Amino acid sequence: MVLDNLLPILTSDLLLKEMENFDRKKHWENIYQTKQPQDVSWFQTKPDTSLNFFKKFQVPLSAKIIDVGGGDSLLVDNLLDLRYKDITVLDISEAAIDRAKRRLGIRAKNVKWVVGDILNFQTTEKFDVWHDRAAFHFLTEEIDIKKYVSISNDLINNSGILVIGTFSETGPRKCSGIEIRNYSEDSLSNYFEDSFQKISCISVDHQTPFETIQNFVFCSFRKL
Image (cartoon, rainbow, N blue to C red):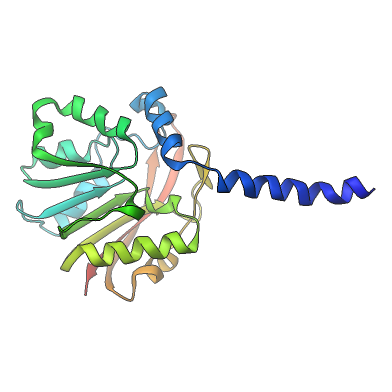
């Protein structure tokens, strides 16, 4: 009986210890070293939702753009096709960025590549467009979420655009084996309302390579 009573406590302690020991970078390096692009749920042949924001806001070709958690997303390819000249791609996984570089070939030299965790990102640059599809929702601790918000606030130019896509409240609860945080339009907007004005939010169904549907909420904001 005593052991039965202790089991939930011991299980909780083990889960907490596992979370504390979780190596985010090691996890993502393993994903990109062992899986092909079509083997991951977030793969898109063309990131139309993201590209539509650039069209909607008539982002000038000289704009300073950062794709946070860009990995080997094809967004950078499409932005180069559109002749954008100042693109930074940041991802925690070196393997993901190396894969994107190999795909782009000689065009890779026209992109600034940053291997690092967004929570530790430091730069003297400021950006006109901050794009994040499915990186923000991996931050589940309040301290990390607020740090991300603070960093984006510091690094986006006045009147700059912030676009964030996360799993919605009806979307998956995990991705790549990791717990995520689900958002509604209101809960996502609430984190940025002190420094940004919400422009619009949309609901988007993403069909994975496995023919399942994941619902996203995409919100756009303008820096005050």
